[in-house]
Length: 327
Image (cartoon, rainbow, N blue to C red; front, top):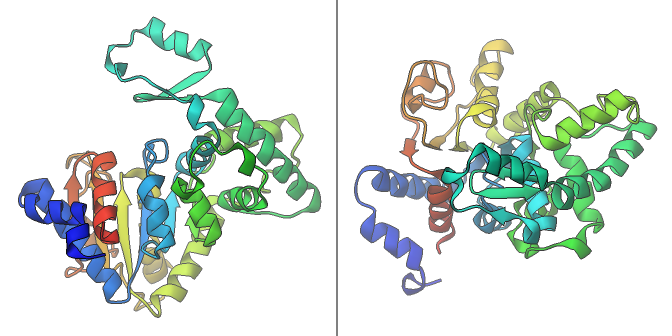
């Protein structure tokens, strides 16, 4: 792709000169440098980025080897798949700020679960995936096998069982791209998701006997520790954080755990850090903590390239990804 066919890159380099715009461009350029020097990148997804259809750019980042691992909430894991099979049934509510309590009740009565301006249809999305994934949960339960949440979804996607029901281009699903590349995914607190709640309901009902059929967050941390040690022994790993909360705090803590708790002295620190967040700096907030605070926790070094972009991730992340992709 020539310079003349990189409209987003050219636009950012010409217009994004100050404040959060400059921080965006600086972070995107440093992301590219990190990869050019042979580094790898973990991306963390909080909020409702999958319902915001981040797959439109993230899927290509995965396919082009610009993302090497993901930490995400259970909601982001499943909502990409919900959108994949139920996109035509979603309802956008552009006037969501004007909704009354009665309006919200009306949406509930229609089995439409609102996420800001977008409603996820319960039957077409959640129940459709429940029926498909339940078969795999039960089969694993009966055979004594255990898998992580993303592995069950990988099995479902790669089996082709849903292929006839796709309502978007599968190239725009980041979970399909991740499954095709067997991308390492770490999902802390999976219980705090729709499928996590559904799994718990089947354990309570007794249709699934072993609650550990889906592997836990502690096991996810041990897998992450193994991946980090193997990968960082050869390549610097960067950390690109979208939002805050557990999706970011869980994986970034693997470094001080290895160094301080397991006494693996000399564990490489994260080699790049960027956070996109609309959480302003405040008292005791992880999401609002400035990057330098992480130095005191043994997560980042004083000279680690660090960036914070205080803006809406649905605006910022696709632009950063487009720049990294050379669009």
